[in-house]
Length: 538
Image (cartoon, rainbow, N blue to C red):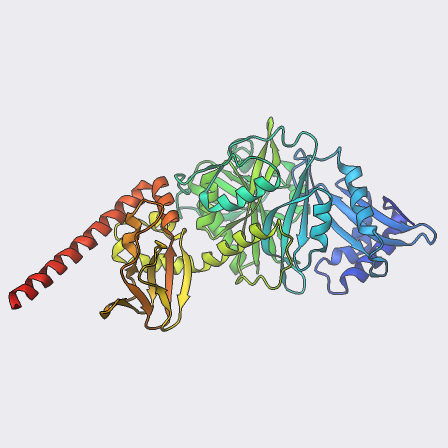
């Protein structure tokens, strides 16, 4: 028999032994092997620490906690973490008892419960699913254990959380699949407004970068935007908590100054063990310092801090902030309805993350409800790596002439990369898939039935671009076969995705269709000259 109770100071050494037996000597969080750190967890108000005790021997055989400091004081958010059962006692239902014990003790203290489950096996995912938690995110390579590991975000809502939720969040289309999956898993209607018209915050480098010291604290505190109104970024720490608490939590601020005056600041926490940074506050007098501050923090993380992972919780009603972060190589990784309490209602949050190392997911074992979310996030991260090269190549392509940098970036964001080996067929005569292929590298031979090779398409040119002109649900069959002559790298634009983008951004469509018309006109004139030449020779 086993008893679940709250930990006392007498349990600390045995809790340490459970962690050692569970995770081994090389655990990434050495504080859980430190007696003093565990003692603080027993007494601190921001944590509930439970133990599972074998009744006849009084031995601690398992432990679990709920941490309330993952959100701001009034957010009523708790993270269910660090559930560990001694290997000698696994399979006896102790994990089940610890999870039930946590839920019973916190259900009246929380609106939102979060779990970050490892995805190398399904064990923790199954426990979360069994007790009412649902998947809302997949975060690639967030944890640093022996190597960087991915985690899945699960959520459960309590009390009045969802009745206080503000509806109709405004999110960028690039987050659309993730948002739809998360809302469906939470049994909420997909009430999001997908906003593709919101421009990113302006690029500006006309600032001096500084770090917050006592001297600048009061000046930054007087800025309202981002602190008390127009909050685009959320986190567990706020500037007005005071310098002492900021320093105690390893929190820092970078400042943007113009002519010596503070124009804004960005707050972030550094986890040296994880090689990770969490951004928790953005304060600015206006729009101009915002892109500068995020960009400079990214450079600092890469160059000075040896950081490999950055995350930020973004207001799901602020598409401009989402768009800006997407431009800075952040990707949406989780969507948590009603995650933040703001004024009189609860707001949805999009967690966005940036990897400063190559993506390498490794082996995963995913439960069925998590798999669509994971596939969406992984696909977006892998596409991110090719988008800069697509954008550079597209800047010189005739079909994309006239697009500005922002329009070109938006256009290539809907493409997918696809490679072909020599003699591979890219598409065949009679195919009606309707995709357009932009050749980033290589040569493609066009072959007509009964006529053999008729032309070669090379780097910077397009295949099947006229299919974009058709608005019906099905494209007409292709009149030619395309075969790779060399290794060919392409960016593939689906006709439906392209049509949806043009519906939202007609300014991009005007340029593309104008270029298509000019290209078709040139081809028709060339064909006319060939016919005239052939006629005159007969």
